[in-house]
Image (cartoon, rainbow, N blue to C red; front, side, top):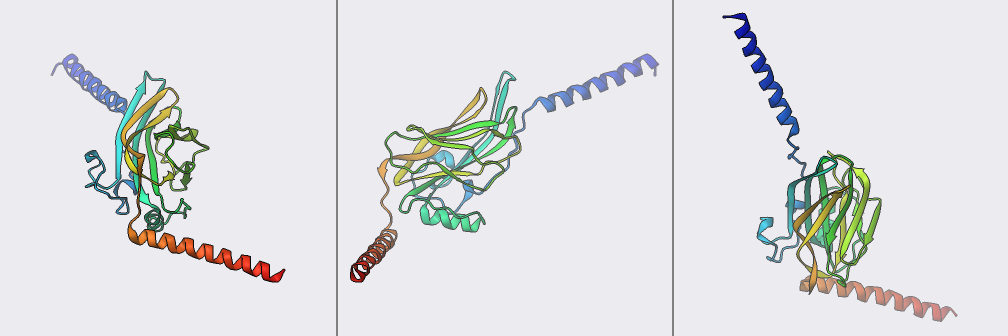
Length: 244
């Protein structure tokens, strides 16, 4: 074979390999780790969760993979997992996952979220989830279950906010972010921000306007607990008066 022709073939093969490598490197990573929220059997199930969840009516699922590139200045990619629990089932879930205990408001529903980040140039700043103004709820909190904890948390009336100030990086997961409300879940949206890159995720669960009524057994246990607390308080008052 002519040496010039052979050299041309070798050069063409080399250029093809280089081009292939460049194309592979240019494609954002879409593989993501998974956590326990999206598949937990403890999720609240009233049969009304969106079909997109694929959960048969239980309030658990995931949004992703997602990816957004703000003209090369900022990127954000990954997945969000979420679930809604009764307080008893949330504590049972934590025990099964060997996670630290929580102290959610008794008698409410726990709204829990966890981020898994695959792409970010400058780190994740904010995670917010929508909520109707005026809906009763506790202040946002978290349980240590991932690589990064939020630095700042805030109730912003129409959204609940967890701020990582750029500490949540690619390849990392957030802690489990949660709050409690006595109201039934409805589809809403959430937002993940990295600098000027932002992704809107929908539908994610948040409490609506309808009050959740616990099952009779749960209600009875709650009433028994309240009665015991009142009885102990009454005895202490009587003992205090008798000693005067």
